[in-house]
Length: 420
Image (cartoon, rainbow, N blue to C red; front, side, top):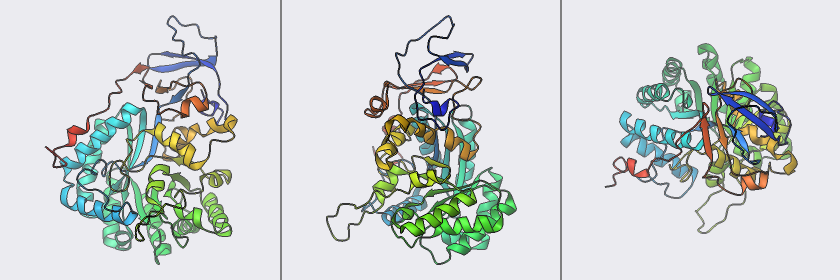
């Protein structure tokens, strides 16, 4: 096991251990050869991780690609495509079935907790919170769910709409969300969000600076609003892409503010690499940068960081399956947290314990005596063996028992997609 998930958060080492399980819980984690139990399974040095935590997803958008593709692969193309599909199709039954399909995928891959952003442009907030609340109850005990109400700048700047969405979010036990990047009113937008979150006692999770424009300043404005207001709730910022294209002085200033404000940052490596720096206006063009934020620099500055799935088979990301291990595996390549490899397993926390702590999930994403035996067993004994294959033959253990990891068939959604 990675030492980072068994009580040594700062360690990047692997520990060879005996893991004892009884009555659905971890009884003990001891040195190899120390266990005295009647039934033993020799894993021959293969790697075990905690069940996974996905801090930033979009369950309400998932799997609409067959009926609404992104026409050009750009962020704006995605936004307009989702808007059209939402207005045409997002009745309660449609959202419910796609959410359930996505959750069955995540569960089969080994995920135990998910936070999802939910589009709240009125009147969608009157539909989606009810669907999400029912789904949260249905999946209790398998996947712990949190929801964040997602609004654009126009909704946030409209006092009546903002209060309506915030009240619906509060009633549903949700988190206040939003999205902005380059906008002249970013200081006001962030003050309004922080103010209403403080008034209603809501935590905050925002999409900030999902843009290649170095002028995007939503993250800095968010940090300023939190610091100036003394807001004491949990604050998470997703994407933060423009931080990577700002000059060094600006990036350092913003990172320092984020650290002072106690804002956690979640990077979405697969989706950001897919969307950012994609420009088809001049014909054939290869992207010049990876689209992701400064995860390594943020972590070095003491900022809590995580990585997550983001979108799944929708106009914002044509691929994905809510597989937290895929996020970890691809994140190593995209974000370069894989060297020195002797320390790389310290990053195992970014898809387990760290996002669990950022979100305040009941599930802790760590392996310890007394914790639920929620594990994922992989065929690999080292970093390079683990990360060289997609691990489709992994074993998922929940409450001490292996679960069925058969994935749902895409054909289940054919009728929603207008396919025979």
